[in-house]
Length: 259
Image (tube, rainbow, N blue to C red; front, side, top):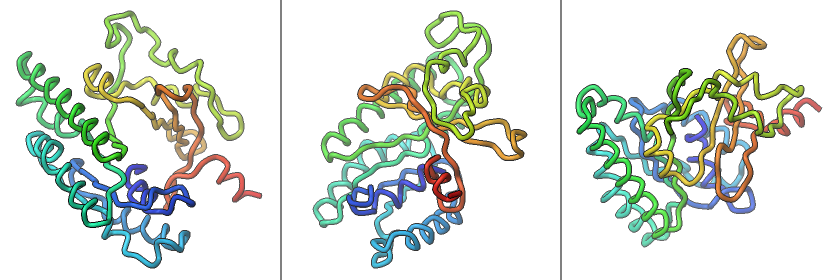
């Protein structure tokens, strides 16, 4: 999980690509993967001497969220208070991770948001959460990373009501850097899926980064692609990445290990 790796990357010194600070991790995906967290902590301490002299878990402020109402309360009230206390104590939080923004809404879809009024309420909630996250980010100078889920896309209308017979077509102009020259079509099935929560959330985020993977039958193991789907300051592009017990690695990392 790339979002868990951020918990340790943000703690690294600026000279090593980190932000020399802590992280507020809001988690709503059920049971927290402590095994993976411990695995990455050991890996980071082994590879980065700067983390050996401290307890990296001390700088991870973990908040478990059980329902949409709790998520709203935490983001609006608890999160700004937490960031303020950490800053005043001299151990500032440099990153906020929400993992994931869609999980609780999907879980309550058949209850609260099953009718038209419920769906309007959901959209209002999402807009309010987005506004508060942006305001908190500006106030404390911290980036906010929100993990999202995807759903299948079928031929027919897209989110804007336009004909969309080939949802993968929008990716054909993206330049990607892959191993052995593999093209975007290798990841077509995954890239054809659409982010959850529709246009309401799509119009809230400033940058979307998509993680796609190939079918598992390809070379027996799935391959992964990291793409900038949209951003106001960089072009759409992507590169192949690899995930192992030490986290996420770039194509150049793999090439260096093979040399």
